[in-house]
Length: 464
Image (cartoon, rainbow, N blue to C red; front, side, top):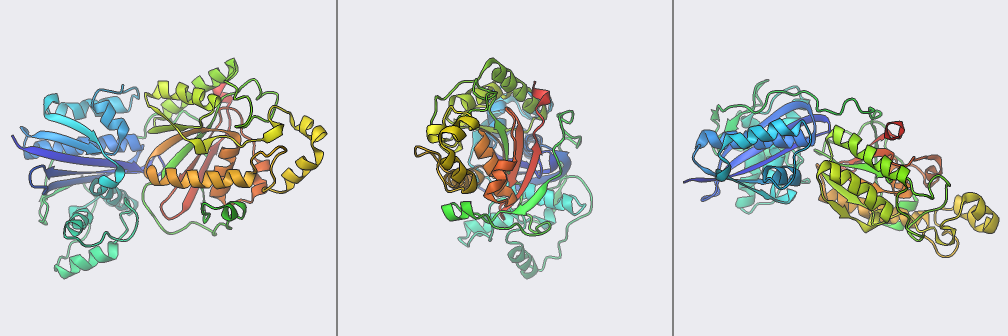
């Protein structure tokens, strides 16, 4: 029995937004690329695009040999765990796609493995090429693919094209030069279905296309996100950059660096201290959710499940964020990862006090704190500049780890405001001009070139 490796990926620029998938079939014995498939699918979510990529890869392998054993490798933990039967498939948009994928081969002929994104570059590049083609009003063409050229370059020992993984434009000049040297006159074809290409050949093989529906996913009954505001975030993970955020560049930046890392920022639900507006940071009593907060967490979980875009959940280590994240995780069937960098600011001696009480007891310290982001609360708490430095480091780490993914970050007021402040290139005093209700949701998407897109909907009336 022959054995094929199917590597597949999908992405959405906006999630939901313009989406595409890529998949490649590899001979498990020789390592030879046998066929590629890619397609721009219109507006869809990351999850839909990933499932479409899996489906196309399985169909491509089936067309080559329906009796082959298939080993699927994907960097989508969600798809791998759901198709392996370890996680439930709850979202209505995922169920029919999973059912189709499961029906291409008998179950005993297919195995699944999760791999890091860095090991899925071929399929990732194909997906980005498909999205790039869609941006031009075209469909992906095998003749214009650079993915297999990159594979050959790596095998021959030559350097990777410049640019981060997943950027279909990276190394384009060297690819065009390679095509010119070979005498190829290949040009992208016009509109059409996804194509399968034989490795090392310019011939296109016809195969069954993946699901043709490009209908937007469920979740459009949720409150729409505001129009994106794009800025250039030039901060680095040091205190000086956190205190002096660079002025954003004017207009829309021209670079297109592939699918972003999208952080959906969920503030935890209410605790007993929340309605009293008391300082509640990481150095206080670590309160749990109140009954109202538990209800808010449940409603937030329902709203996020309806949108169907979350692929990973990461939470602050404090009790109120853990409990909020657990409610979402239970609804979405995802695990929760704890990230220390997402904890709330330590407010020192002000923990548990109202603003008025702090003003009465520590008037000079409060006045300094309001005017200077480097000032600490009374008793050796954490300054906003210190918090910003921590958030910058956390942001950079998570952006690198989850490029092309949509991640729910369950955290607190100050970290969320800081994410938004840094993305907008706003001054530190902007933190005092934002209001975040309990269980409110915002989102920041980070691209490989440093651009950031901020989307806000802070109306929590649907969570009450």
